[in-house]
Length: 342
Ligand SMILES: [Zn+2]
Image (tube, rainbow, N blue to C red):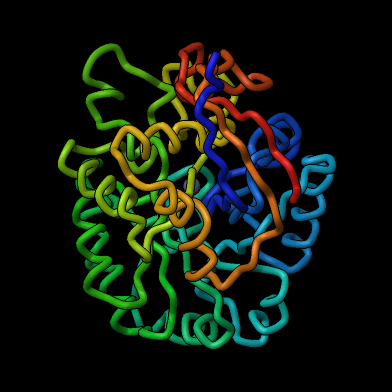
């Protein structure tokens, strides 16, 4: 019997992950990081990660929770316009990036930024550029839900123009408008999730409501997904994989006030491998999308990890310690065969 096709991926990096804290961190950390060499860990805890003590302590809690997994957490700070140059200089070696949330847009973003006045932000953003700290942005306005990201593009462009030395990462982009913005400014980059490459709003709400596919930014139109697919499958050098894997307890998703977030981390590489194969994209593009581009953009050198996938159907578990993943209970085409540290 011929053995099934195998695909090897090296040093996978997830440039946008939520590992949460306390019980949830304990519950999902190992499954979320097992196939990753490293990940940019988002700082939206309660209260948000906003001091050196917070960063150091959160990193320790992550290391404890992953329990020996060979994985590097790239720490981030929750952006505040009041950070001083001195403060950033004191913390620059403990963090890899700073995450900006517009106020009140997503999980635990209440303390975020509301105005985007260039002069008010000048000192902190110029210091970030000086210390080579990228600004990661959840780019949505408070407008109509389908238009929030496209409306935010003008803010991205304003910041990119005013701070040409600052690397600005448009996080989890979902629209053609954001893809187009990539080409306009040299210092704009983007992460793309696996779910936004697979689904549109139709999959979320076109039939029976699918709470486990509900996230912010909400999945958009087919032409938006096409634009995202094009840059991801071609491994456009300014885009990186960032899962935005965002676990919530099952009761918080399957309720009359469904929390936003799709939990994909344990199955993301399997889904991406299948997606790239289906679209006849070369394996080297997948490798660039899940690691190489991020290394170039962030200037990080990941720890060694080899992930071997095999084309054998994998039945996605109904839950991971009480968190329901995308495609729970369904078969996906690829399985993880082996993860090693070489
Ligand atoms: Zn996120």
